[in-house]
Image (cartoon, rainbow, N blue to C red; front, side):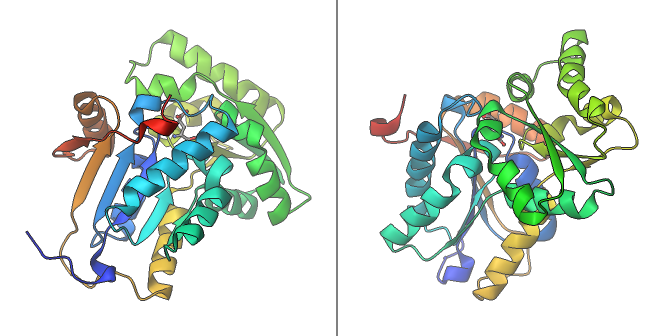
Length: 282
Ligand code: DGL
């Protein structure tokens, strides 16, 4: 076991409601393979997509407190619902706790790529009901360019379909077609995948939306943001070999391991079950 001695050698923390955040972790592993990571999937309370803002803020603070116990050096909220509801709350919470670490969400990364990449200025958003209801993407697009039109579609069933590991039967294809229909109608040329689970079904979405539509995900932008944030504080891990990855979840460890291994295409190793404090649990 290697001794962790300096702040730069501490892990980067990543969390989501389930396996969706693994799409962000994947990009982090590509860009920053020498970092150590601790990933938490709050699978016991999945899905986040139909939670209220208050619930999402409570869960996010609770997870942040848990991850701070592992002395992490940066926090990635790899969940759009939690980022939309709780990014500011977590920033304030970290300041209140005197924890001088950066927190990076997923909304601005994909929005900036989409606004920069759209030729027509007509962008679509597929996201969970909580993310759409928060208005976070509307605000982010308006801030990036007030003349860009955003067409938002809430997809209540899509993340649960992916998280359940369901086979792609006709019903799933019909559900996805239904979600994409308003975006085809609105003639968008760019679609933000506003849920970190959705890149896991990118081929299905691309087929349904057609060749002329480019899909935007947050992973690469987040990885760039993490790299810059760590570099700015002199916190890039100085090691030259591959980092360690640790996985935790609040629900069933075996199903998380099986699904995560399939999606990340990498053995997750031991997945630790964690109980978060009961005061905010449901
Ligand atoms: N992966 C989460 C997100 O990006 C959502 C999935 C859920 O509903 O929990 O919003």
